[in-house]
Image (cartoon, rainbow, N blue to C red; front, side, top):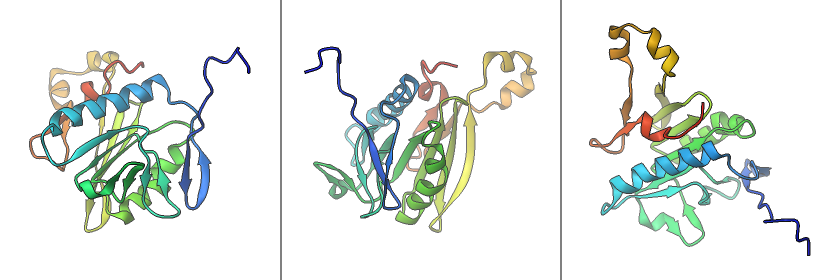
Length: 191
């Protein structure tokens, strides 16, 4: 037994297009913060409601060739939730970009989520502190908007009129009464 190892790293793999793809061995601190923040927002909002929020690390089974581990999900059909993960399209999926996974999240997985019937898809970029929100319209994803946290130095250079136009939150399409505040999503995320 090697006593120098404090733990043994678990390799996370996803099945993308029928091919095993190794993900980042351990999520970064910022990835974990964002995932936890989003999960907390939805968990609190959905308390006592039919839909359920899931954090990073829960397996998603979409087909025999597509099995992912998204950064977060909201599932409104309890029959899709099994002991080993979620089987079938969630209502909302969140993917948090990393250099290793960005090409999959932005194209292949986005296309699969669209084809499977996911209603809302977020691509979260920790480095840019931004969220791309895609909404399903007639079975196709449409980019609704891109929401970004502006750094303080940029805000200082803006006029009062420009600052008044800065979007600090957005509505989740699944719920009329849920506003997602960008500062809550990116709370404690380093620049």
